[in-house]
View (cartoon, rainbow, N blue to C red):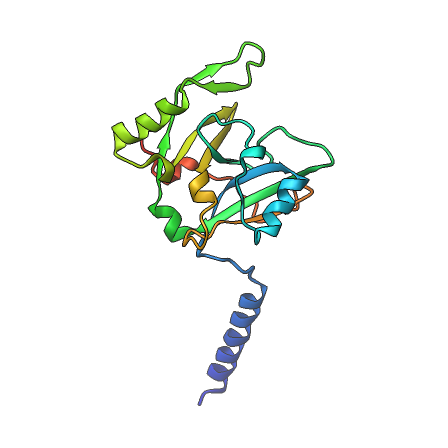
Length: 198
């Protein structure tokens, strides 16, 4: 066999494995759903829950879009800070997440006290009725997306989805005491989800 050919094949072989070894590991079966800033106690509760988000009525906070876990489209998107804050990313099984229906709610009211903060012009009953009557979907199984701050969007994962056990959706969370420590750390484009109503 030609020596030059053998030499070339060997070089290509070595180069391929060197590049493969240097490439970062990518879990192509998962998708980043969003980000949340939580208190250290909530972060610990998620960790104790097998690094899965957990919704609790006692720590529910605002329920603009309904009961459940709120995530933003960017890391640190919610203006909460302090030494007790933890920055978290939530991921899911990409295939199962793609099966979920997502609805966009555009109607916002600007608060006079804080013009950068918006409030949805809906009641909880209005939201559920809209999801059921307009789209024929079960509210408890439907993700809800809206604006929340200027240039920041939010998605609600209903409590029934977040707290489901042995779900194929396989929600997972990773929290850090710094924004830079959150991995993966990529903005989420909710518009790529095929939002109904938008």
